[in-house]
Length: 249
Figure (cartoon, rainbow, N blue to C red):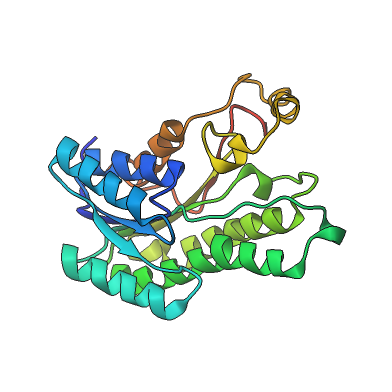
């Protein structure tokens, strides 16, 4: 796949899903800015990998996506380096399980800040540039936890569910300006922090509800994101698509 778009910003690029998405977009010929918050070494290693495999080394940018001034600075830095930002993928996220009545309010604040507010702020900052240019792609990364309830994930599910409303609202607001906004909702994905935290018993219980009978891969999530960021997806807008092996069917 070769994309008509030249420059992408991927938040959470130091994580397993964000890094797979970054590889996919770079392989399509895009210059990719690799965002991290804490894991600078992983982002830098990915940048070197992209340079070796695609001759397009990633631009490494650090920011707390819950802080508006840091988001604006990051977007300005990426736009200055690449000339503009054609594609935004918000894959930055945090995960924490706890029953609602025992979960500290601070956990809710943190989960909402990174998973929902961060996507809102990044989309807001990039949309101004996309509107002026009259084109763009935005993909938000949610979770099946945002599509259905899971015990022990009240705060996490609420934050991820908020991305559904944000996706559909932005699609309506900016769909007439050549911009599409879509959302992918991964299920159980191998080698993610959430998957690694599961006991064998918990994993088996989850997989019992997945018709595919297995966990997905970050590359499978990235494949869908790559499609949504490409020219073939011009008429796909405002959609929330699960990558979950049929778990939410």
